[in-house]
Image 1 (cartoon, helix red, strand yellow):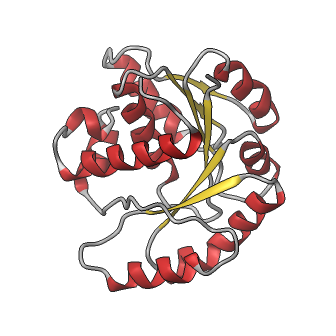
Image 2 (tube, rainbow, N blue to C red):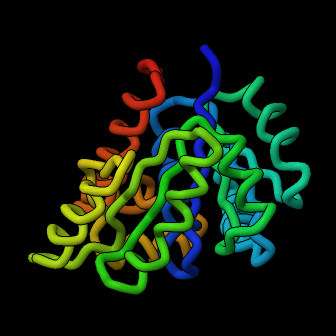
Length: 215
């Protein structure tokens, strides 16, 4: 079976792209899948997180590479030949590097926080996904408890042409950040907690969309 190639993309910085990439990668690896992560964001946050994993002796799943944008397609294809899942963390701007990352994906995940700034910023990302002929999945991220605004935003996005909203929502929970600070995924640090359950549910939803079979 061909590898699932996933790109996390969003024009607005601070939407939680790197956090989502790290936790999903670990969730897939925890299910016995072979996973690779690719960091093309010049800030290199995903690379720093992975370096902490290596220092802590967390093993080599996921494996990791940091590349410049023009090498994205070649790197993703090479890693996809030897892994079940490749997760790409793209930069927070709509330039060539982000477009190459979107073009390389089977599915583009677009994290959006429930607020007007993220909503206003998401349209160019969705337009790029359509232009590149890729499938996109909007993920409601850092969702506060009992937020009517989240439901309103999801309903508005669902009315937009070609937009798919993930059933799984990611809450605004401390364990996500705490795990990242230790080079971990939340499914490793807080197994059985609400945060781990949310990431596990999202990973399962993604697996169904891209045809990932049981590991």
